[in-house]
Image 1 (cartoon, one colour):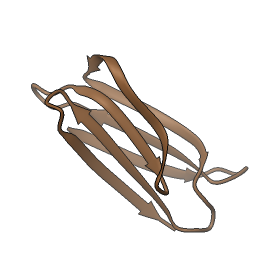
Image 2 (image 1 turned 90 degrees about the horizontal axis):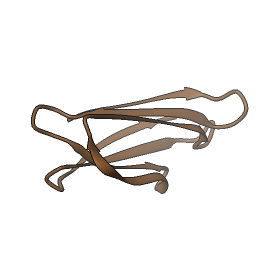
Image 3 (image 1 turned 135 degrees about the vertical axis):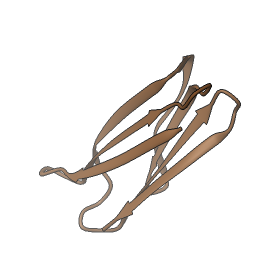
Amino acid sequence: MQTTVTHARNPLAGWDISVSAKAGDKETINGARILVNGFAQYDEIFDEPLDQWQQQLLQQGDYPEENTVLVEITNGNGDVIRTQDSWK
C-alpha cells in the first residue's frame, strides 16, 4: 500500500490537504479515514474494494499552529495502514 499526504496553505483559512492511496499487488482498499489534529474529517467504508483512492479536504487545520494529519487505510484483510504528516 502506497499512501501520500500533501498540504498547501489556503489563502482564506487553514490548509488544503490532499490524500491518496494505491493498493499493491493482491491488495485492495476497503476503507479510509482522515483525522486532522485528532478530529475525524473523513471516514468511509467503500461498497466495493478499490485499487486506488484520493480525497481533498479544504480549509483544514490551523495557521500558523502545528498541524497533524493521520490517514488510516483499511485493506481487504482488515489491516489498518497508518500514515502521518505533521507541520507548522
